[in-house]
Length: 342
Image 1 (cartoon, helix red, strand yellow):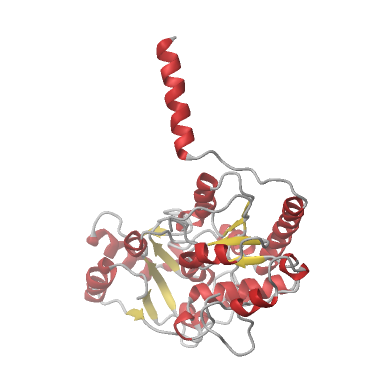
Image 2: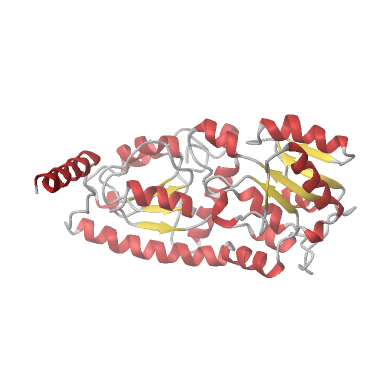
């Protein structure tokens, strides 16, 4: 990781810290920083100098890189060592070296690397929902949940980060004009579970943010967290959000045709949330699939397969290489020319 504090503190960091915790239950695991030196954590530059290529320690560990913008640089620094890519967002524009395994957090990201790294080992290991969301989520059918004090006092909850201008500048005023209590949450919240348990409806609209960024929504935990807390979810369906969310099923599309249509549907969901919530069995199946025990099992299977793959590479077997785009296009041109001549 680049760092674990200050400007690096974000949802992506929390996910990677959770991943490290899950992996530590399977194999010895360490977080390593490469930009920010931090007390108590090893620093990449120091480790590479202490374990130069050619030394036995250089090939004893599997390095997992994940911070998209820095991945090409990290792969260059770790060349010659066992390395895998924990892939969240896609579309950064780099290509992976042959043989580097990809651990994709969503089918959307898996499909991207299935196109651009089709001969690399590929694995699907979604992000895990922390146990507190499943245990404390105030779902109507979750009798072990801890309801938030005061019940659901927030009609509509919106997290400002990544939310579209449409939602913030058009939809929010329209909903307030209907008399709804709308909270736009900004900044760090220590107890997000409690906050989501206090809301009837959650609106999540990240399509504009990711279209502007040029990369994809890698997984989208906030919508799953909202569902775990028994909220009616109105969401965009871009990228990895479509892995789990379907309009009219687990969620409802935001920005569905017109501002008036959005306002009417959200007001109806606030008035009668039960009529808009997903089927309990289907939701529980999703939460079970994304639970930490299930994801720990997925990681175990992936690591076992990666170990076998790396053993083969270290024994001298060459990794498969897909043909270049130029080769593919030349071959297609040759085939077309051959058919015309025939």
